Amino acid sequence: MTRGQMAAFLYRFANNVSMEGPQGPVGPQGPQGEKGDPGQDGADGQDGADGQDGVSGLDIAGPTVVTESDGIHSHTMACEASNGNEGKFAIGGGIKYDSGGTGEVHLVASYPSDITQVGDDEADGIWRATSWTVQFEADSGTAYQPFVICIDAN
Image (tube, rainbow, N blue to C red; front, top):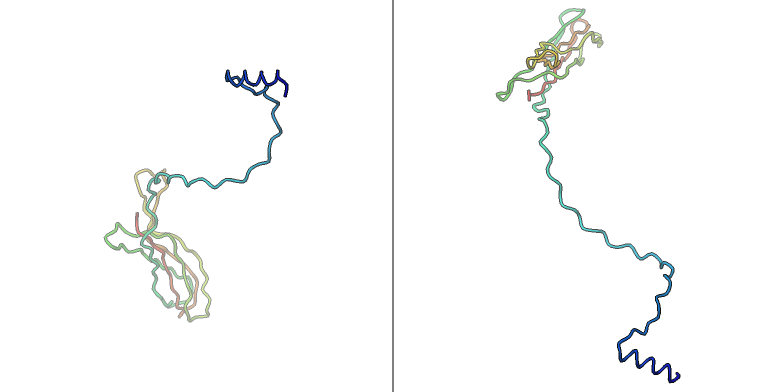
């Protein structure tokens, strides 16, 4: 080191002058670091509004009946009110062969019956059935079971 360099160093040191040179250019980007730990779970959202009441009081009923003659027969099964409810409504029905006859029962029709309007506006198209009717062809002595599927009025 020369005397001049030593003098410059001492001057800078004594007067607290930076000994760094000008800033150099930016270096290349380094490699990507490791993946971090997952964050904490967020807070639970608010409860949604209550939905509409669903189906309740499902009931399937139907007696076993024996035909007394050959031909077309008709049977209507009504839904019964239960547990002090306004009543039950029919949502389906049908017929099941049990025994006897030739073993053939031909369904002619299966449909809701005793239909009443719900509400005041006929344009709403809201109607409910309180019974189900089946019509079928069978021989005399055929045992069959007509049935109705009912739910409580909600």
